[in-house]
Amino acid sequence: MKLAYFSLTPGGDALCYQLAQVLPGEVVTRQSLKDQGLSFSNKVRELWPALDGFIFVMAAGIVVRTIAPLITSKDQDPAVVVMDSRGNFAVSLLSGHLGGANDLARNMAGITGGQPVITTGTDVEQTLAFDLFARENHMEIENLEAMKYVSGAMIAKEPVHVWCPWRQEWDFPENVHLHIKDLDWDTEEKDHTPGVFIGQTWDEEGLELDRERTVFLRPCDLFVGVGCKKNVDPEEMEKAFLDFLNKNGVTVGQVAAVATIPLKKEEPAITKLCQTFSIRKIFIDSEPINALESQGKVGVSEFVRSVTGVASVSEGCALSGAAGKDLIKKDKDVFESRLVCQKTRYPGITFALAQRRHRKA
Image (tube, rainbow, N blue to C red; front, side, top):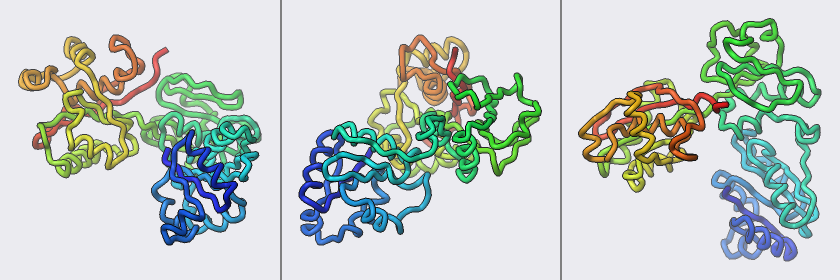
């Protein structure tokens, strides 16, 4: 998490430096602003789009007036925490859930021995917040405007119905009712609102939901396997990647990771691709790919084997990444996975797409 600490007093300066020793970040003081020839508000404006979190050690009113023109939406704004110069209180002021300000306030208070001040309704009522649930489970919120209905129901302890096309184990509160396709999908409960739908598309057979009051969570559960020749042009890699996603009806936000073999660990085009789109890069060893080959689950190329040591790079890495082979012992799947798109060739590049279905029991 990229952070910055702001203070306008000597006491605040000391606290900022103390905090930055534990959670590193730029420390901005009255003196540093003078040295840079910048005003406080201009410095905040400069850093606002580049950072994940701001800690202001000063009066909350100063902060509110400064950041007010910069605020856009709860799914884009950084976390903002306000503290007093003695560290007695750490107030989560903006982006408590999606931006992580609530957790940041708790961390700051943990360092100083102070009290985190959390005012989000679901936290106060100690119930599930589905925006936080989405973040923790790597899901995109497609219609954030509907979240207010779900959050209101959760705070009031009213029924909330969750619809998911595949079997999944979640520890939901008693007022949350989970409906799984092929088990209790087509029931009268589907007319109850508000609700949450978890899937890749609204158009699920037998399901008609109030889209205004139902939150649509799209899992970032797709893994792109990539193979390429040495020193492929990064611009060509990016162009091919976007074309591949577009042809498969996938957005960049749905991609959990780009998977490749260790041989490509330093490949500039793959590194640049992941940096450009802020996508995690994972590496798959030969064992799980060879296992997929022996099971007949991937296409085989003897030429690719002669160059890389494995007979399938893009398909093997996509399926292995989706199965969690980068996470634990290679002989055990953490997740089920399925190949969504077989190897697709571009000049000097191959892609394949796999989906992580659900955690195994």
